[in-house]
Length: 172
Image (tube, rainbow, N blue to C red; front, side):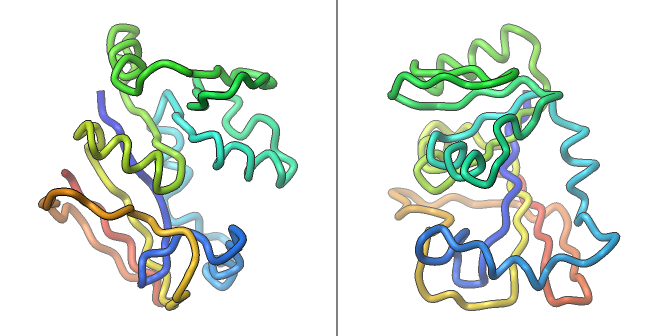
């Protein structure tokens, strides 16, 4: 089973500006360009989302963001979800074991720094597909929390877009 983090950030490492502002991504929207998202989403069978990310998506009017995929939201709070979304309140390692036992092949990790940090601590992220947006935000939601140990990543592929964005595909 492979776990992938597919995410965009500013050059200085913020996935959102203050107050969860994602407007820095707007100039990157180019008609007819999906940056490989369609192919990526079609390659996954499971989504794991953090509660804060799910709440943000829901606030945008999307109750079921990935209706065709198995979808877990991690939260210690008791929550109700529409559609195919399941609440997971146990450990991340037990969820990963469950998914492995049930034959999951490719998991999309969709969340913020807390969720990412939890997976990093378990060495449970296999690849990072990172879109570096050519802007310095200076403040906001960091992509990574402070690391307690060094991690080496292997660059698999890099691609530059005309709008200045960089796609960097790494393996852990």
